[in-house]
Length: 440
Ligand code: XUL
Ligand code: CO
Image 1 (cartoon, protein in one colour):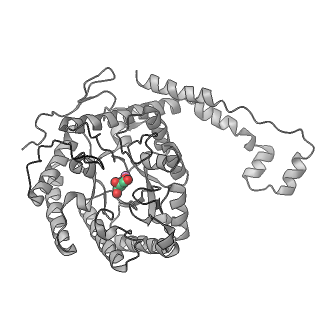
Image 2 (image 1 turned 120 degrees about the vertical axis):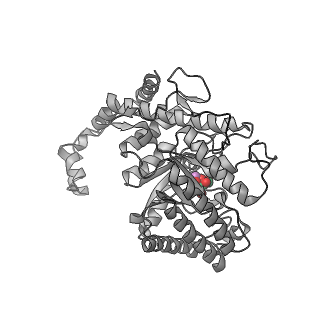
Image 3 (image 1 turned 180 degrees about the vertical axis):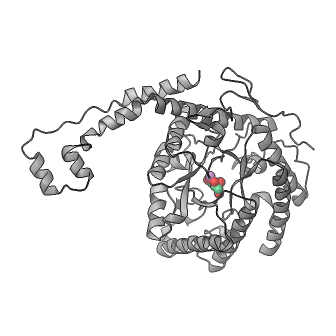
């Protein structure tokens, strides 16, 4: 039985293609710098946006028209959406999807009933996994939608809510393991505060660290070998979220002895909300050996909230893929489209063409980044810029042999130094060149 029966399997038609339902740049088996595009990009669909999103916003009603709209029974609907997810991924040649526990199965009256619902849907997913190439990139727990989490989950002021969250994550890790999930994500949706006037910040942060330690211990106990990922975001829905950005979350991980158990899931729109660009967050995670996975989307810089748009800005994906290539790829992570179609793009066809737009934009970004690396000018100029650290006094500094006294002695009678120009405009032109050249 087919759900998207009007859509055929999406084909690659080359750079001149204008068909919204065909790829212009994403050619899965094409090799870029010795690796297939498919392996570099490792795309995933976000179950919540694509199969749960209905176009509802703060000002207006749902707009989406879906073939499952007439199905009312929650469990029948849940199974149908799983069928839809597999068909959707297969038609797009996307090998993974990501889910929150509550995306895939409805809640019951108690956690036990909810877990039973979840188990039934997990069995349904497992049946699909037997015959499909599609798998799970990561699972996670929704600890932000239900009213019980209004003051947070692992940072709640209420110990029963904390216990509920722990039990929920325990189950979500089990389920992710059962489905062969490659990673498990922690996004601290409401792990922050609205006002410091009622917030015991130190207790909340310490409780969060204890929560993560319990998760690490439990994963070890049940033999879950997937990578744990923290997904930083500075705010929204809270005024301030504790995992503000990669740098902030890294210092938290280090302070509480958690660094070796986690990597980062960097989301483009979260980076810009934190006042960084996408590349900054990727770079900071990468140079610390902690770039694990990516939530591929983009924001609108003029709107300034988490708009979760499909990534169509090639400049940003080029610089993003530059970091990802230098990271040696993302495996076992990938590029999850944590992105939703605009409210006006309400047809099922738009679900396909938006993913194609995102995939093509990342594929072109990958090709452009590879051009930049292979052409080499950027790397050469970078090396050149820091060459004073390759010998003499610079080498002494780099090797930790310098002191304030030795540096003073070295410089005191010299003429004032003048570093070389930055050549930023030329470098930006090189990025333009790489994009144009990759698009040919
Ligand atoms: C919210 C967000 C989440 C996480 C998973 O901004 O990005 O969807 O990716 O909980
Ligand atoms: Co996300």
